Image (cartoon, rainbow, N blue to C red):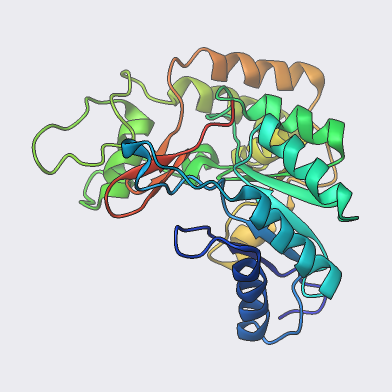
Length: 291
């Protein structure tokens, strides 16, 4: 790893892997595979939502055991910081209180948050994090590239993979597919025009600030009080992401972007099996709710 790099890893709770020891074992295994003795941040991937027998009235929620595992990782030195993911305000406060009783600060909560996904409790979750002193990490801050301004109909139209088809629908609008091969239809029906009106405002604000639309979208996340964690597949994208730092949108510009996002009566739910609020677990999708 590059000097000064931050190593973050996650534990995904499942029905057969959900006690405190499983969290510790997962953290130790990640550190070993990454060539170290510890990690900078160990997170629980999601609430304990994989409950295959819930439809029969049987649930076994073990969030407190997960938090105990995080505490053991912290006190043993396996993890320098601990966090959670996809927790809404209520569960976040419970986790914060539980860990505090064991002398462990809750460092972070990682949620889906961007200009195209801000209604289902995301803003309230960021606010609760501020109140508790827990940093909110925003994944999909660029909505899988939709907010970069680089995706075009021409670049997506000839592609047949599920992700590209759904990104095209978000971009331009379109009806939900039908038939046996429509599953999982994550995007749903998007009104004609897609995100075009929001992109126009993004480009306008970007031009005024001499930034890219992606940098503006990331800075919007920062202005809302969260830490964006965009992906990058090449050095140029790393540099472009870094261009979101060291400056701030004005309150008027944030309001312009808010208004343009509010004008859309739909939100970005992900693509295919990469969703905003659920995990595909073989027999179907198990969902969480931030609100």
